[in-house]
Image (cartoon, rainbow, N blue to C red; front, side, top):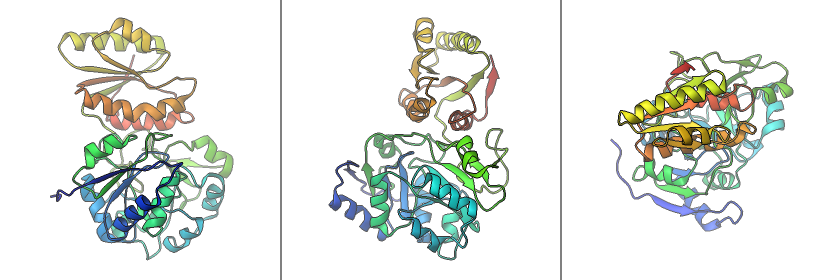
Length: 357
């Protein structure tokens, strides 16, 4: 049972840092408290990664299974040496190319990292974020923050502070409101303890980008095709994630047929009295609005720039929850580039419920 506490909410502008607010957040974290803070990917739920009690508090606040590893966030490259026992050559190359940034790498852990943080594994997931507020909070806290996404387990990750507050008010000590999040999906995760390195979770750093640096990169087969029964090696692998309250179905096929099929189904559900949501794109949104006026229709962005879709996906799922939408239909997206990350999150949200149009 979670003890209700008074959650402080403070605003920090990344471009006009408030040293006193950062110091206050750092003190809370050093004393074993939990602070939500912005990163370039989604909002994170931070606790001292080297303090087992802090990691236990994170799991409790999220309602997260304790075998689901936490990512340790650092703010200096040299700080990596304390928490890993070895730095593989593949990791050195990736760090040089993508750190600081939205890439998490898995290393053999050192004794400094408690098993409470790693979900019982002998490996540790590490990220060096590029967001200036995140870096400042990590530094003020002592250099090592365990930080999963700042939502209750299974729900869509928050890209706005108000959704952090919705899930975490009374559960954690502080929420730092840093405004909008630029990327909108969690970091790419690569296991550098195996050869060739393995992509475990797609993100903004795409499989193609990893391949340009490393040459050969393998991919975990459960990433796009269902969950594993094994202990998860990284966050987001085993359990249902990113899910709104409504039932999500993804439709694949030729786009014109997909739009037609979704219009038919959405219209029938609206007629039956259901609250319906449609995840559209700039290219299709007007067709849906013309055909299914009673549905909540939201464009995630344009297919010509799928980064816009990644940025808005979680916010749309959250807005559907706000509207108490019961049935959600989504178009499928190409699984290359950042589209792989979009589809990974959508498939998790839909419980892999995919239909051919």
